[in-house]
Image (cartoon, rainbow, N blue to C red; front, side, top):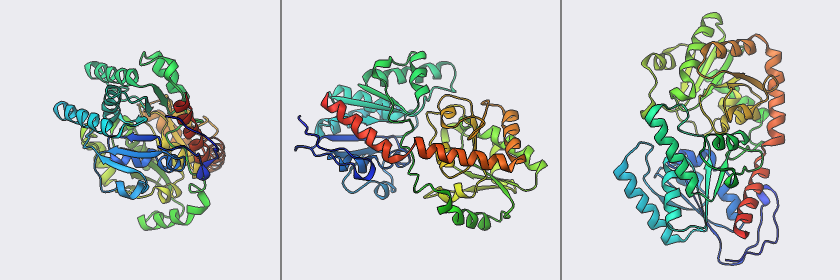
Length: 402
């Protein structure tokens, strides 16, 4: 297939003139929430560039709310759980879909969708097979389970023609781990899954919404709010967060914790941790939020004490909203901040160092303001969505041309 590229411009004006027929691109994730969170702006950018776009994930009522009308949705009932017999059927369903639509590019992410998508696209000879690697699921696992999950990562990478981790460190790390060789690897722009719309993530724009949320929850104006927005699982460091907060709450009557996140069936938290989340009088747990912007605007500190990450979007979102951050010194997460300039790094699985970092920021409002200012400036400079989308479209066109 030939292509005539006349013009590429940044962001909402990305425009690439193509000969007919259009290139076909399909994006695959296991569940819709991942598609919504990490593909924001991508379908629109590729549609404007002249691609015919498709999305595959598990059926969800939310899908129609975030996919552009030009993008065709193909439901495939993935689950995050290990279901071998069902997964074999899903693999053959993908094979049938790929044969029917004859895609030029398949890009996949999240464990189940990536494994099945990589195998099916290789089997059906899709020419460009892109793995968007947003973290290594085997990290934090042990024994046989770790070995199996690591093997699956190797399979995904083997069948992919291009691997795009969302952080520089991850490129080096997967080579050191023997997951893949460097020749296939690259990174879009300065990293992240979808960068940040820094005009939307603007602190002043949402400050009133943040104050209204605090008032609604009964948090006084002088209350200091820490945020934890993530899946409520052990590998996100939720146990350590609750341990640290219990100690802080005993020492400081004006500190509150805002928790936003879903529980997971396969990695349930201990009952003691859930008891603190659900019953502590200064912990506020919110259900599903259409947007987290008012939640970020209510915060003084954002915390993500995770054990494993790719490039956590929530950390650059918080910094874009002018919030000081605390996270763990792990691959991916540490790339989102500049330690002691935009936030603080702590050791993973260590509630004591987490407590100490939070205490340091709680003790010093000026330091929080300094980190908030520096973090916002860095995100605007390095992680703007318009520039990211231009880089991604250009990357994919170059693959097609070559």
